Length: 227
Image (cartoon, rainbow, N blue to C red; front, side):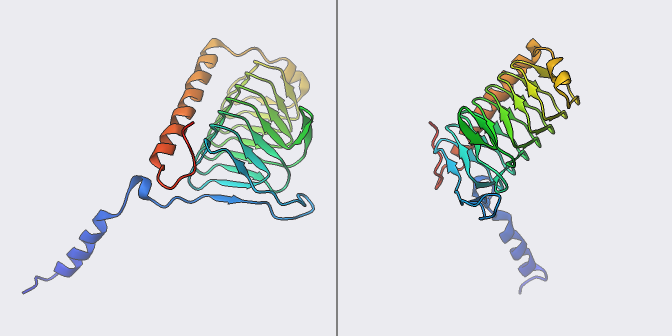
C-alpha cells in the first residue's frame, strides 16, 4: 500500500538533483549591428580566443576585444548607434558596465567611437559613451559616467563620478563622487595618490585571475583559451 503523499514526495526529490555551477544555462548575445543610417555597414564583433565574455552579456556590431580581455556577466558593448569600439589587451569590463558607441573621433590615425587601452579596468555599472578615449592602465570606478572625453594613461576615476566633454591628463585622480564638466576642472586635478596606485594593481590582478578562472569554469565547449 502506497502511503498518502509518497508520489508527491518522489516528485519533489527528483528536483533536488538539478545541475549547478558551470552546468547552468550559459547565454550571451553576440550579433552584428542592424543596418541603419547610423551604422550602414553590418559588422560582427571580433573577439580574441583568449578573451572571456561572460553570461548574459551583450556585444553588438563593430566591437574588437583584444587578447586576454574580460567582459563580465551582464556587461553591454554596443556599436549599433556608432562605432567602432576597441578594447585593448588585458583590459576588463565588470558586471553591468555599459559602453555605448555614438559619435566618432580619430585616434592614432583611425576612427573610433570608444577606444580603451591596455590593462584598463572599467568597474561595475560604469557607463562610457562615445566618442571617448580611455588610455592604458586606467580605472573607471563603479557607477561612473564618462561622456565624450579623453582620459590619459594611468588615471584613476573614483566611484560615482561624472566626467563629460573634457581631456584629463595622464596620471590624474578624480575623487569619489566628483563632477568634472569643464576643462578648467580637469586641468586642476591632482596626481593619483599611492594608495590608489596600489588599488589599481589589486583591481587589475583580480580581473585577470577572474578571466582565467571563468575560462576554466566554462572550459567545456568554449572557444576561449588561457593564453
